[in-house]
Length: 140
Image (cartoon, rainbow, N blue to C red; front, side):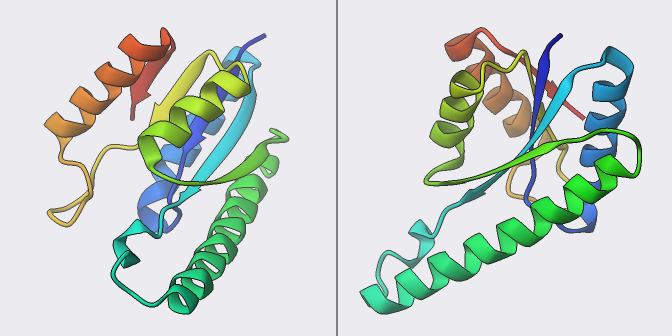
């Protein structure tokens, strides 16, 4: 039995990715883990109390989004785990995948022009993760 790690940032755009990861876990009878990475580094030039407060708020948002993802999975018969990590997406994704001995990492495809990753950069990111970890990365 394998383990699927689904990175999520929450929101409506993530539901397609979450649903696909849930279906994959169900089909392959794999465990499912949702990951939310808190990265407040965009606040580096702000006063320390503001950064700490924002970090806490981002973690709360992550916990909320993960609870929603777990509910979506449970409604489809999958009892998923949820993990919040702090840091950069790339390093935390790799560390979580290795720590939890996952067999597949699932990433969502970008939606719209404001997406963090465009499709070509997402695939390049996925290829780097696969090469570094030896873990299959699926872009949905």
